[in-house]
Image (cartoon, rainbow, N blue to C red):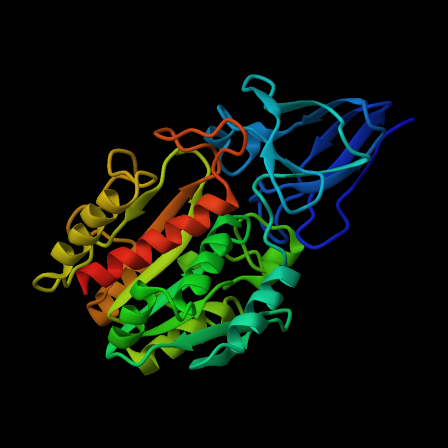
Length: 371
C-alpha cells in the first residue's frame, strides 16, 4: 500500500511533492501574501507496521532555520495525546527527516500540538457560561471571524492576557486554556484572590484567520500583527485595532502577550526596557514578576532569552512596548519553546500542551503574589 497524505483541514499545511510507497517528500506552504513559513500540520494514512520515511525540504529558507536543529516532530494517533517522533535535520540540505513505525492507520503530525478553531469555540462557549463571566466580541478579522474576549473579576487592576498574534504558536492558546480553567475555578484560592483584585480581559486568539489557514506568523493579508501596534488599520490589521481600542477604553495595568519561540529551548520573558517614558517602579515590577515566576515553577528560567533593547530604542510597533509606553503598564511577552525545555527535558512529549497549561497556573499564582 502507498501511504496518503492530506492537510485539507483546520490549520493544515503541507505540500506533497512526491510519494513512493511508505516514503514521501514534502514542503511547507508559505503564509498567504507572505514569505513566512515554518508551521506544518498534516495526516498520514498508512498500514499498521509501515516504516514511514518522511522528508520535509526547503527549510533553509524557512522563517527560523535555527529552529530545526534539536527539534522533534509532534505526532498523535487520536488528536488528544501528542508525543515526539524520531527526527533529524540536515542543515546543508535544509531537510527534516522523520522516521516512524506506524502503530495506527492514521497518524497526525504537526510543528506543535495544534489548537483548532473548533476547540477555541468550545473553550469560549464553556467559559462564557461560567458565573460572573462577561463575553465580548471586540471586532472581526479580515475574513469575518470574531475576536473573542472573556472578562471577569471585580477589582480595579486592569489585566490583559492575549495570545496567538502569531497563529502557528499554538502553545499560546493551550496556555490560555489553562489560564481560563484556573480563573473560573470557584475553589481555586489564587483565582478567588485575583478576581477580587483584578478585572481580567482575555483574548485567547487574536489571529483566527491565520490559525485556520495554517499560517506561521501572519493574518489573511500577510501582516505580522505584532508589528502593527503603533498604527493598526482596518484594512491591514483590524484584529489589533479592535483589541487596542478596547484597551484604550479600559486602561491597562498589567499585560501578557503569549507566544512560542522556534529556536530557544526554554521558557522566558521579554520586556519593555527600551521605551522612552519609563515610569518609576515600572521596570522594578516587571523584574519582580520575572524573579517570582522563576521561584514558582522550575519550567521558567532567566538565563536564556532575547537581548535587551538599548534605552529609548524599543520597537514601538510591538504590543509589549506599545502598552508599556501607552499606559505605563507592566507588560511582557511570554515565550515557550517549540522544542523541549532544556532544563527539564521530556523525551516523550517535549514541551507540551499540558506543560503550557500548568505554566499559565504558575503565571497567575505569581501575579496574585505580586499584587
